[in-house]
View 1 (tube, helix red, strand yellow):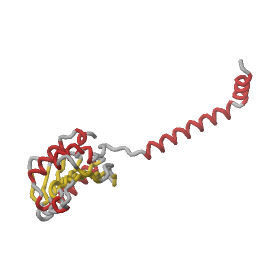
View 2 (cartoon, helix red, strand yellow):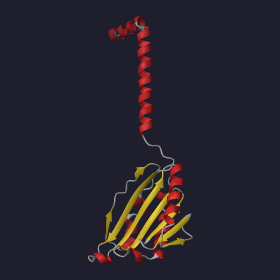
View 3 (cartoon, helix red, strand yellow):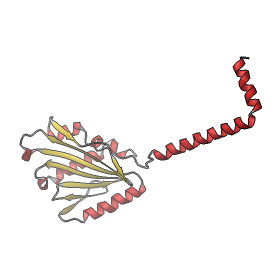
View 4 (tube, helix red, strand yellow):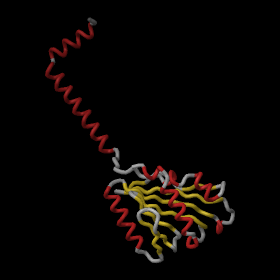
Length: 193
């Protein structure tokens, strides 16, 4: 046997209690560190949806022609029981008053409390003036005529969709927004939980 291994065995034999206590303390510290790390990493019942995973550059090019300008961060920002992500594109029209825009904001519930919060806030927003209830898309939908935005509640997400001339959103076409909403709702990224 090698001399250093023999020294270790002799030390352990002579200091069995100290080695046992030290080993137990090391294991407890490792367990506490693991629990701390586990508690600091967010655990969501539903994964937040990234808006640009729904409204992809390819979809934007189909809507706005080949040349598009993308804006907004795709990373969902968590606040309480919901997370919000935005994605928007515009065409390259030199006339800012004629620039066409396609945009989506996604408010995802990250847990069951967030689902209830989305439903309650959606219903409150639906009571605003100048809205039109829309059927046949999502669980519930309405079109805000003033902002030109289609709001759709579906599962754990609330989509706010805008599609049309950015300078005159009140002229946005509801049927085009509904068509876009159906396309976004069929995207696999929205169904990941």
